[in-house]
Image 1 (cartoon, rainbow over the protein chains, first blue to last red):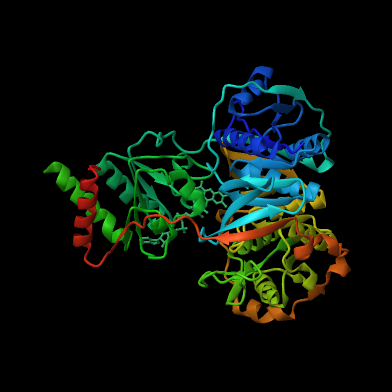
Image 2 (tube, each protein chain N blue to C red):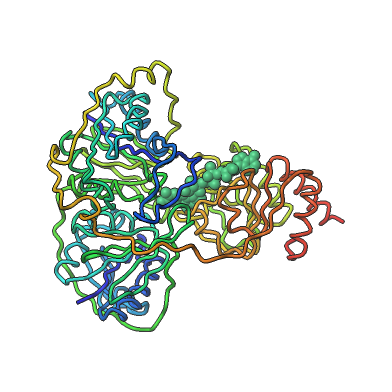
Length: 324
Length: 263
Ligand SMILES: Cc1cc2nc3c(=O)[nH]c(=O)nc-3n(C[C@H](O)[C@H](O)[C@H](O)COP(=O)(O)OP(=O)(O)OC[C@H]3O[C@@H](n4cnc5c(N)ncnc54)[C@H](O)[C@@H]3O)c2cc1C
């Protein structure tokens, strides 16, 4: 069976991840074209009902491994490798995200399978899947084909849209024997939130700050500008990891996805992992001193200059305009 | 314990990278450097060694690449590695992720490390996956994108950002850990270390020396192939303002915001 197996990630409450649902819809679409089924791997104690509901996004069959823990990749590699081999799946496809990368990579080693990552689109050529992968900072797109089966496809975050069809999936339980090395990493704490709980998803205007601010204190300018504009402040992973701003404000692959009316990026290079979290903003304004910064390739207004000079004056000008 | 750090030679950040349209591979002819992400892995190894929570006998830099990659090893040694291993063989050219991960695992196997560290990505390939491929071949636990490592009771306590927030994970040794660039601020090598780097032992290895099956590597042994290269879909270029007179720049920004009813 030329089927495609995906993995549905869930949080501790059992809610499935949106990127996983997108991957299921994508594999349903592709499986129809290559004459196979969309299978889904679920680990942990998820109810029959919840598993069957994945049919709504296109799953034909859900393989549930109740005893396999969620959250770390290697036990899931054991589970998916078994299902791929037992059921003869031709491809494994993952939505964007850290775990998908790690599981896909593990399967590559385990099954001697070809892998393509950061895939933005998948097409069918001669009954086989071909992955489109942007390379060299998205300056070119490589069409990557697979020499043998199975082939592993790891999507870029939000690459695959969810499509709801109202179906129900068949649910089967699988017994998985974990590899000895898969049990040598254990989760101590999962999904810890650090920093105040701010709601940046609902803001119409976001001022995003990056490493170009120079120091944690640099965020003060962003806060003042955001206040003047009636918006909120967001951040890149570089500054969150550096401890300059709370994780709850991080935009991108491992942070939040936002689509405000205006995203004003100050001192942000525009790395792909940041871009995926804010590219749907209605208007993007970037201030960066490097005219070659990637952010200028997807901003509506790019200002080449020193943010320390521009941002404070902009704040004053906006205050004056609003006041007058 | 013995720590192996995987390093890679990549085109210098200042070089405009391009693909050779005949071979469909990255043109590596220009200026090259040690992958910046790997300097964080070397620094992490040095901090574990200097931290003293576990005795570290040796830090070994390991690379796979053409002859020129020796320079990346010299840099790694200047940053603190005690010696280095260079896997180089014409048979390896054109290896994809699957073949590269297998080859690196084979050369690491010959070193029997207790810990393998690497950077989260290479500056040129941006694959993020090599650590997890290597780990499965070595049958070791692994984590990628780690931003904090503490050694306690002979185990690693690692932190990273995952889909739902920060995860803390305990990992038994031996293990393979890829580190994010936020984990540390790499030190600058001293002049003495730079001068001495070429005198530290450097082992050259060919595929046969480490038991690599020639059928599984190189372009012929790879499981993916690049069928075509296309330009990205054209997008409308945005407006650009160069800041010469900041008052004028700010006026233009305000007008632009006003037009879109954003103020
Ligand atoms: C798997 C993975 C997941 C990731 N997830 C995320 C994520 O969720 N979110 C995220 O943001 N990143 C993420 N990253 C990191 C991402 O790749 C980038 O490293 C990060 O976004 C860079 O942040 P930055 O733009 O603040 O810093 P930099 O890339 O260092 O950019 C700083 C910019 O500031 C400019 N600058 C400096 N000084 C000034 C000045 N005075 N005036 C104006 N401009 C100035 C510079 O020209 C530069 O362009 C992830 C990476 C990986 C590998």
